[in-house]
Amino acid sequence: MKSASPSTILPMSSQTTNGSTAVLSSRTQLISIPDVGTRCPFYRYPIAGCQFPDLPDDILIARPPTLQRSAELPFWQWKLWGTDEYLFESALCFDCHSKTTDPQTGEPLRFMLKMVLRREHGSRRMPGIMAKRLEHEAKFYATHLPKYQGNSVPIYYGLWTAETSWGGSVMCAIMEHAGKPYRLKEKYDTRKNRDAIAELVLNFHRQNLLHRQLCDPYIRWHLLWDARKGCPRIVDFTHAAGNFACRRSLPLCRYASAPTDEIFCSELVVVGLYLGFFGKKNVDDDEEVLEALEVLEKYEEKHWGRDGYNVEEGLAMQERWIKQRRLEKKVAAKAIMAGTTNS
Image (cartoon, rainbow, N blue to C red):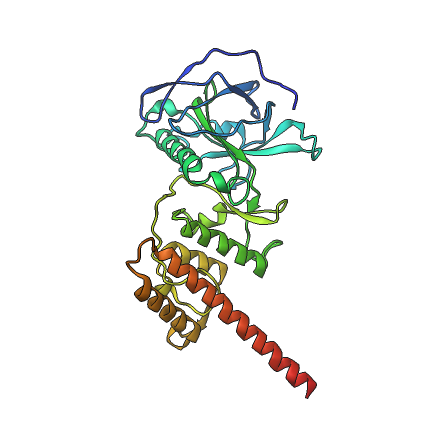
């Protein structure tokens, strides 16, 4: 893309989330924000040990912001964010796009900005607390999510800061636009797509990642569907944890019963309930669940303590067993139907 950046600007300093001073990169990003009256230069906020991809060399043009997917907010209202008149435990979210079009698609590139204002109020006030969460999320993207970016999660372009007349000391995260909230009983809500969401969440747990905000009402904002790519995506890792040991005894999938105690992991249970994965059959009468638990128990008894063994190995074996059992039952049911038709 054609460069729209100004001449090189000398590095400036900005307060970090712990109150110290950081020297900002000379790399600037111009963002056109509605009703502000000028294109604002944002500087990349350095985080030790973290690297982020470069943004296209272009101006980003933002729409008016929302709060947790609300209606767009007027300038007079959102500029009060972080003041006593408008405290809100959610960042301002700006849908934005590049000024020029992508030569491959002929369309502008789309991005999402998560912004907090008035960091100068200090780390103990809501703006400072939210800035710390944004920094935690940035580190999480850099350390735990590189291989998922562009697929399961958006591409993350780092944190950026600006000193402004309209919002004080501003910090924003810039990331790829990752789709719209997944809505039950709406256009993209199909059995196949719900299964894809469950697999995505379960795979994070296999990789020892815990989101921590896939519960009501947050799950309705953090599970997205990207219609362009035809896949689910997860956003907002401000509370996420890595190196998490999931204690599940069953995978997240559809069941005739509701084995919530047996699944045991609260995040998987909540997602399963949200997706309608559990039936009304009594767990004690659900042969598949009882056999799956027995299969896992026997495997662990045999392999526990073996060099290199970890619990995910046994759980992976159990998942294969469940899929094979269901496939065999499906084949058997088709054979019975075929026999009935031919008789």
